[in-house]
Length: 594
Image 1: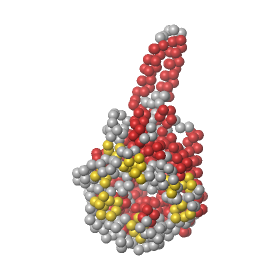
Image 2: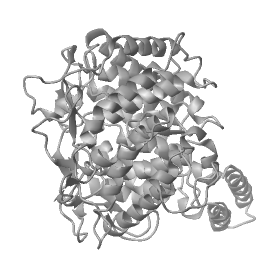
Image 3: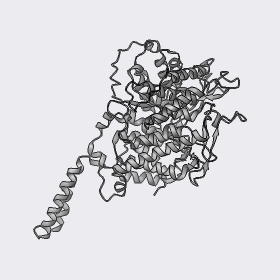
Image 4: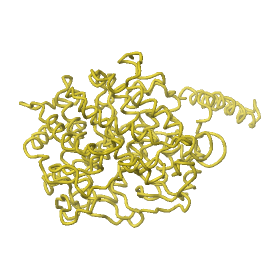
């Protein structure tokens, strides 16, 4: 693109001089320039953006100095939240950033599941933030935090927690931090701890053992949604659970099993996945969002990409990437095909043709008919998953839709009604999903557009969510009123993805370092240890040819944060918008931005 621009303007200058001398009629200057422009344009065809385009002017470049400024802004954001948690809240689970107090389980109201499903009286925010400290290169604080967790945290508590939340937030972080501590390469600097004796791994094991009763006494093999860490499954426990809650345990349980050499944990997680998979609709291939763990009946028949289903699809693909089990990839590919066939609306192609922008809606699992006209903020994770799948074009369009909502409100409402162009549920608890997809799309395309998106998100959070002692949930995205809660995923995911987006030289991005992020944003290396198990045939009775550890699949799936993955994106395309400006404007109009 650069040589085209030079050639174009040299020719314009030369023809202009000739025109002034009367050797050529002025009109021929425009025609000749357009001829050269068409040659340059052909190098990346439909992605050409003219210099007069408002979107092109705003998003087509991002100075290196500004990137460093944004990186430090993301680091400061994390530090402000983390330091205030340690000062005002530790050892409690969360920080109330407005009153500068700690928050633990709501013992006076056990039915307050919004709090009690997540908070277990085990210093949640400290544990959840461990690997973010390492990613940011803060070895001193990482080592101090690990020592605090080892010395002060116990799971021998009369706390009833959600199996899914305890797994992804606590177990996942303990495993990630343990791997960082014991990595012989130490890519993030010297994160080792003198005298460390696998305590974090033992803690993850202890927690998993306390969660195992949830898998007992269910006729389907799907776990109860909640378990008491001291007493097991509560006597009044519900038999209803969401698909994501029952089917998104395989990454953490699988890693634990492979580190310990004990198949128990992976086996129960796989059994739950298989049970859910067997219940999908024969007509559409879709799953519902709420199921009865005893009867296998669908209590909620809504099929979508957001709450209740999101991480189920995510972990089918990520489990395959980590463990190399072909059945996981087969399930993901089949699920993805059903999603594309029954949930996707709008024009066929993202970046060409006529019609509405592509959008994934909520449908009835049995017939694919639309059930409502809202989507939720959790669905913003899906473009990132599409990047891992390799469907980058579709990811670009869906991401642009969620970014348009962000531009309108400076946040993502929990539910947005695309028909009414208004929030249905108006709060924003500092969720990371849009940031995650922005980061993965940038890694896949290296397009400066996504750096601008990250900067918009950073500045919005700083302007609207910052409180006296941290960052607060937005109670209402329109009036920007705040709610006194800072969920742990703000430090473990939102800040981490923002930091990595702007930190081009982070060890995560270096050639040879290949990592995957769990659904809670915890860092896990693609380690050959995770692809060797003595119990493979126990899980899969069918006789299959052994695969190479280096070969992931016939579809050449890779993690998007591997630097080699970006070579597929033409160099010249990085100087244009990822989405044609006419389509970007269409999405902005659809959301009410313009």
